Picture 1 (tube, rainbow, N blue to C red):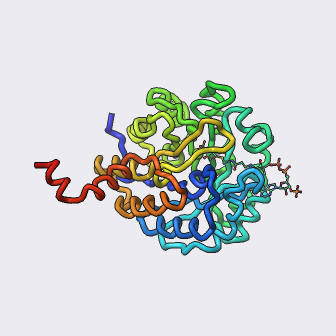
Picture 2: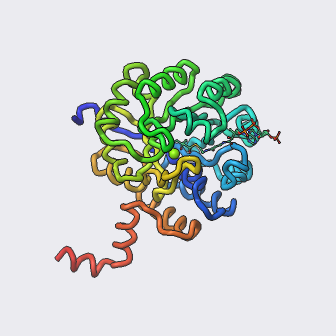
Picture 3: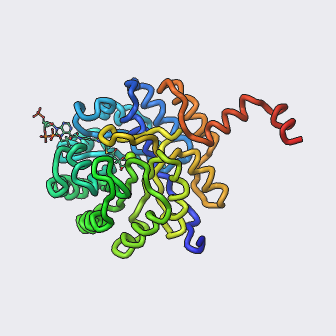
Length: 314
Ligand code: HMG
Ligand code: MG
């Protein structure tokens, strides 16, 4: 099962975008900037910092331009943002973004609720983004949402996913992230979707994006790794969710993912303690406990202290 497992994995951090878009509390811009600056020091190579969408649709990220202008860009870290259309791209370019991500869903109803367009209209709108972005030297990633299930339509046909992957690949995005928007995927389903997708797109161009709503995210990641996938999306502390997908909850937590990858001897370049330190600060900013299991274990061990720990060991 593990013959194709990559030696190195890129952890694509989406907490500042996917995480904060779903927080009920409005996080001040300065705290978002501090969060991203902390993440930039953890060894992460990719951080999705915000969205340039309509502020009425996602008020939590209405300060995207100030966030992008305020962060300290660390060498070796790529910073990206979501853009749904040309207006979003122009706003992203105006603040010096060098990578953008377009997004659409494999199910019509979620797509309509999320971006107010049919899937075909959304693909057309990408024409105004992908070409101009690439001409400006900006990399374009794409997300396909509701790959494993839709909150409105239920089951999603693998053919619908494959058609979109083919279209996006043809349009020249550098990577396609397959989104389990509402966290319903299970390992055999992931294996089935990937076997179809990898028949048409090289595995280096596919990323996996799991929400951990039902606790299956890491099991699903393992299936992806076993098929040679080497980019996995996650969110610090397990923040996350899509406001237009009822029932969606946190992304796979970065700490949980990095702990598993480290334990398997897969290189990430990420310092786990620094991620935990960031999540600890975040808990006070978002005003709640974050769901990451590793975070809870690490903070619990810190609170118990070395004497209690050695007692447990002895
Ligand atoms: P619309 O109302 O249909 O837009 O919204 P429109 O094209 O008809 O324009 C209406 C007004 O919006 C105009 O302004 C435009 O200029 C303005 P007016 O003339 O009325 O003053 N407008 C914009 N303003 C700012 N930024 C823009 C923009 N575009 C148009 N980019 C739209 C269509 C796509 C804009 C809207 O539906 C939207 O912003 N949706 C965003 C939804 C979203 O961000 N959802 C969450 C992200 S997806 C996700 O979380 C899933 C993922 O994590 C993967 C997974 O988990 O599966 C990626
Ligand atoms: Mg998501």
